[in-house]
Image 1 (tube, one colour):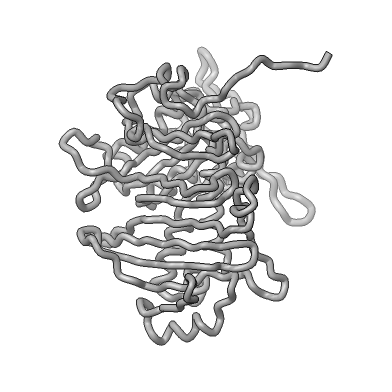
Image 2 (cartoon, helix red, strand yellow; image 1 turned 90 degrees about the horizontal axis):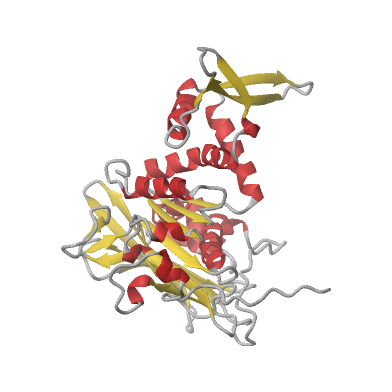
Length: 407
């Protein structure tokens, strides 16, 4: 489970941003909250804000950290192909400073559960600091797994087996993360961290590329499986009961490749016959949910994190509500999967699905700096709705002026 995500000096965020998914256990805590030691963990976290406030930069910060962890073992050769972060550029000092990224998360193993604290600092040239600590969920103190960097240029691998330490020292470049290299070298302590990032799904619903990528994943997974096709029909029936089945036509091409034409089957009125409709003719919302299925299924099965930018893009508010309810239902979400999303769909603030602890905001100040804060941080908020937000009681709304057009 993701417990906390912190980052600093990345795009519009100059100062440290802390997205905390934990709350102290209370007698009135939601039944949907997950339990971890003396804390509860949120299954759903929603982030609201105006256009250009920095919501997508929060998402992109998590994407950047994940990709650097997964790919950095490839960096540092003669081509120096480093994936450099974009710091806050509207300040001379921060433009030259490092960017930092840090997560707290837990991994369950039977009855036990380990909490990890992992992070790194990086600039356009190298990793300047990296650390990994761990503890049992019921303990307060972390033990060191490794640390590198800092003012003294420390290099402590004492939490890693001795026979693996030398392999890391020999192969590590300045631009490479120990976790990334260690996972490549099959070092258990590093592979567990890398694999946690790999298990998460990161999706930008507002990007046209997203539909292409997600659609490809669907086709690869269900073309040959009637059971998978039935599962998708059942999944789509949660909002559209008209689709009864799929028909897949295979077209052989001269180079030996195959092309697939997917059609949905709908029952004709006053007849037992089926009408064929090319999948591409279905609504944008149906196509989005069709493409969403494999990632959603995988996240729920693995108990990983689904981080989505612009969840409401091309989806009806009731569909979004249904997705939130899925993650908040312990009978469905048995593996403690989490959904973190940004959105403009304020209707979700009015239907009492989201608890106060699950609502966050991003606001940009006059200097172009984004600030992240929780609804819990706003005094005297007991009950809330979309009108409170749209009236500016929580901030994080656009300051509108009259639109001017050249004549």
